Amino acid sequence: MDIFTVITMLGGLAMFLYGMEIMGDGLKSSSSKALKSMLEKVTQSVILGVVTGTLVTAVIQSSTATIVLTVGLLSAGILNLRQSISIVMGANIGTTITAQLIRLMDIDSGGSMLLTFFKPDTLAPIAMITAIILLMFIKKKKTNGAGTMLMGFGLLFTGLMLMSDSVAPLADSPAFVDVIQRFSDMPLLGILTGLVTTFIIQSSSAMIGIVQALSSTGAFTFNVVYPIIMGINLGTCVTTAIVCSIGTNKDAKRTGFAHIAFNVIGTILFMIAMTLFHRFGVLGGIWDKVVDSGDIANFATIFNLATAIVLIPFANQLVKLTTVVIKDNDDDPDEYPEIRSLDEKLFISPPVALHQVNVATVQMAELARKNFRRSIMQLSEYTPERAAKIATAEDRLDGFTDAAENYLIRLSNHIESDEDTNDLNLLLQAVTDFERIGDYASRIDELSQRLVQEGLSFSETARKELALMTDALLEIIDTTVTAFSTEDEDMAKKIEPLEEVIDEMVATLKDRHIIRLKNGSCTISAGLVFIETLTHMGRAADQCSSIAVFLMGRRRAEILSNHHAYLHELHKGNDADYAAEFAAKREQYLSPIHNI
Image 1 (spheres, rainbow, N blue to C red):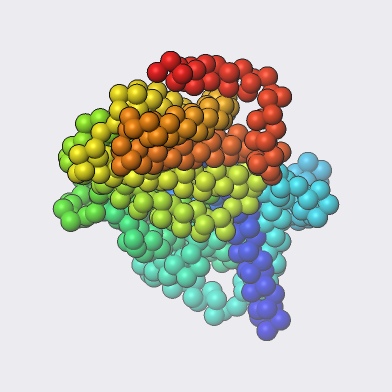
Image 2: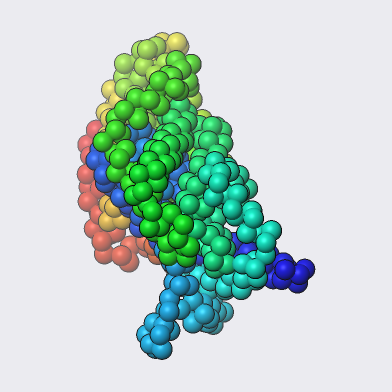
């Protein structure tokens, strides 16, 4: 083998690895919504978890990526430890799908036009031609994922063919044959080789593909290959151990340990089984048989599938083992679980990451709503205990807002689709708006404390007006939280009419209060508290309007591009639904003021 052949081989390897990388990216981009749906539907069934892990890994072409994603969902509280371990069991099976695709290289068309079509030297150029059409001529974001996946597929097989052609002379190399013979005599060397090379390349699918390409030399026999494949499976554990030990909670570390334990146990069992089978002559027909890429793919699948089948009944014991090895730590911070859900490991699938931020934001929205109700109660019956709860909740809202904003900004670099971008913009706006609603609750609580400390009180008329205003405000906050949590755009449309009525109420009540100040029926100090309370209530309603507009504009470009113009048109009263809702809320809340 001369230097030029080596260059060709390395070039083929580079093309193969890059093709696998971008094929995985294309598959993730095209199926990200389905990926999120699959992971969300995992139940307590271990078998369903294994199937889910298999399917997800088949989609994203990386067992490590699946485990990273699983760890992120576990940290977020979406999955429990038992579910995550069942997904890990399936991840190893799913990663062999690539090997099954690569076996297409062994197709012997025998003159058949149909079989010739499925040969890599035909499929690869067709895939790349189609990819170029999608990426350079159609140029639509909806087809970019498919184009990227097809280009990766074409590059993968082109690289494999280059590698196979360049390593063919190795079959006549005494040195190469001698090295291979050492592997047959020392299976532990094969395991170690598979482990180290997989850790370096960071992909078990890629390593199996390389072994399949090398099998074209005809020098690989079954007894040489099977230890290497088992070593490849162990190699993925090293990466998993590193990923699952950095910045994660104890259950995430347990998931990483479960993956290691699963592969180590499977390797030990298979090594024992292979040794016994060979000793008793069970494998006599295949032990020294020269293997091709199809044989390698089949063994990789059978090894991982058999390991999963054997260990599924012991899933509970595996969970217990992880808890024994990685013990609970009472010092683990669990004060604010919603912040722990913002795990950057989920960046591998932006829709899943966005979903997790949405779930946490709904929890914070509920907290803001509860805090506002508490602050309203403080106006009529102030208690230090309630004030302490309001302060604690406000700290939690502030902490989440800072963490979520930073998380979403970093996540934006991983988002490609317009739909995901709109979802991210909505979340950025909603996180800030709900936090501000919490701020206004704290300020009303401070005003309540001021009333108590200075011995002030509102007049009977002011209390009645404030009660009416409170009803309107609690309705708009309740509607906003419900519309956001359920993504109900029809409900969101009812927010702006009520917000405009609340603006009118604020202006009307301030005018009426100034009259009371002039005629002496209310003190100046109490009057200032009253007016400040109205101001904070009006601003809280404004935040609800902001969330509603972004919620409606998420799927309507004409609203999102200029929401001020959209609101201006609504306020003109030309929209029949808006006008009817506005009139109804005006009658419900504004008209009764004049009877007080």
